[in-house]
Image (tube, rainbow, N blue to C red; front, side):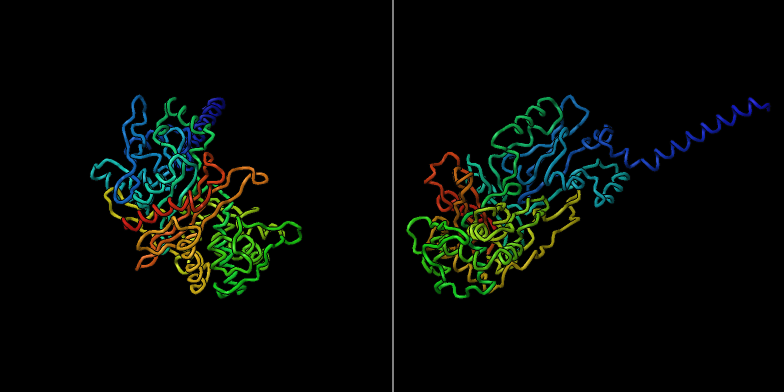
Length: 484
């Protein structure tokens, strides 16, 4: 072979070698990356080529799949009562991905999870059509409907927990939305989503998990817990050192109570019953900011909570003395989610033991075999059993003979605490109405509830936790007891 031909042969050999290296690099090194790339439409087509598994409540599917028209994505997601369940499930859209349980449990629902490897392998030999698995939730359908209907056309949220296990029984947020309206990938779906995003009432905001509010007087149960746990007081019926009027520390401003209340040196029980700002503001100041933060941390404040859906952290801040006193009555920079206040009520009802909140009870294979079952776990010891029982007595007095009488359920022991939280510059906005509670039966406490209502249409003077929020909590507790 002459020299020019030899050079051409070597050059062609190098090109062939480069082609082989490139081909193997793509097939073996970058295969997973390319298969999952967002611009690989074949992956998306395969994803929607079969029916998605369902999310289950009370043994029944609250989701489904339907065939689409004029699209190479064969199936899309639908909900049987979208606005009711959207705060729990989130959305699943061909164009806009997914959120909440639909996102976190996507592997099970699509059938692509490693937990379903055996099922996928078996279907290759049996010829059975691929399908997704199911996610069985802890939700109680009757409680969820009671929460959603109770909120009605008002902005707000409700969370109900099983204090003994941490199971989420209800999680409602209003106004809500129907995820079905943008589950496809058409212009109609896009327009529907944009309309929701531009809505000033923020229907896609999960107020139960992702909105933080000043907790108002519901927080006084946490301050009372701090007083008991730190030995500031141990007898809930003994007089406290609570002068009236009481001036905020390092200030000339007197802390006010709502009306002419018997708050001077009131016992812890009476102070909670009529909701004395002066008593609990002074307790927070007497304990100091560090001890208040330590107590709130035990209830789950100052860190995100996963249900498995992430909830924003509730904050009890590091602050100066006057602000710490105000934070002790649920004002100042004290901010909390409804989930967090349900956790507070649940821990007290469960004799001080705070359980990790969770929404997924089981995961099922397409053949309905269980492939995962959740085991309840303790998150923290919020307070001693003895002190929790003292606080239960105080909260039950609130419902029996205090500001929370509208939460009474005949034949059932109910404990609770009302709250009316100021917000806006110089308290310029209408307050939020709060109520936290639990119900007890012979077998313990099956439910703890937190309700917050933002009622912008109500007269300012008519807004109270006992008036607006307590009846909602009552209906949710009753629904759990009646359908347990």
